[in-house]
Image (cartoon, rainbow, N blue to C red):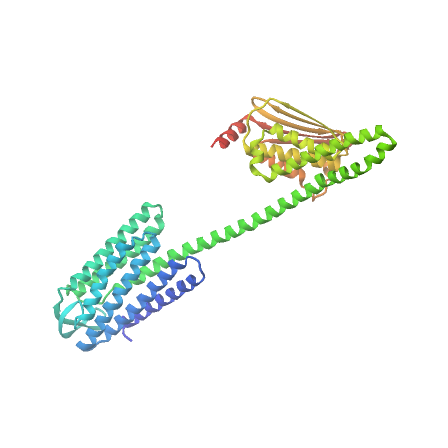
Length: 460
């Protein structure tokens, strides 16, 4: 086998492989239109190369004319597919303009099929053998150029201008790497195509190079599309992972709310129902004790209402943003008093608006601290102090409970670590002191430097 057919076979094989690869990607329903168009472009290139091989093998005028007409026919269809691929790749789709450009190729195609000798030559008298530098011979026609060949040149130049404009617009849009990849591949292809037109016009005698320009276009754009595909797959995986984490977070939050509802409101309502059922009988025997029961019943009911308000606030994200921190803390303490025998004292000194992020951290740390006091501290008194200073905001939560030893905290209990992480997220300092038999104190200190940043974020 001689060199030219061998090279053409290799190029056709590469284009066929790349085309089938992108058609398989299109079947996977990821960037379907883009990869489908590119796969068809690759298969069009394979058809063009096969037709070109037939022309190189032609040894008489009749076979040469038939092969040349087939080359032009396939080449026009291939050129149309490239124009549509460029439009899809750059997302610049002036449909009417593209149809006009396609019509130029359609006219050339019609002339090529009607003319006995094709669009390039009016007549072909004979074939002459030309020896290539490496010793291989190919045949060239001797004849008169067809004046209608200008339609092919017009179609080629018009589509070239369109391709250059789309690259420029894509670059201006910010997709610089994609635009440069397309521009590079098109530049090589256009140079090769112009070389072939010089061969057609008889300005030089050499093999056609368009197929190698097509190969460079296919390889460069395949690498570009593959890179974009990998990025799209990674983005898709990130979105799926984000969705999975979101579902987990929703489930965790749902479980937490259900647990809080069970630990607070449902137990409180059960106590209310039991007390209300027993009060009529107690009233008959001892009205004074029944009066105390009514007061406890009122307190329990208020606590249950407060807990429900807290849960409703957490269920509605704007609830925490709309209320000042002092009101949110008061709401928390009312709920705690409703479900535990605690005397809670809340003192707020000063006031100014806080960012939603900072407000949420103060709220969550207070909530976690009060829950820990109820579950573990065995306390009877709790003091909450919120002080607004010009240079800092200080939250203090203390109880008279049993206290604890830091070294005896089980590894699975992460409440303190979570509170520390929340404090660090806003640049606050978290201090916890506890002594066995002497209670526990938590101090959250948020400095003014962070205050200014937080206020700026909230306004932005």
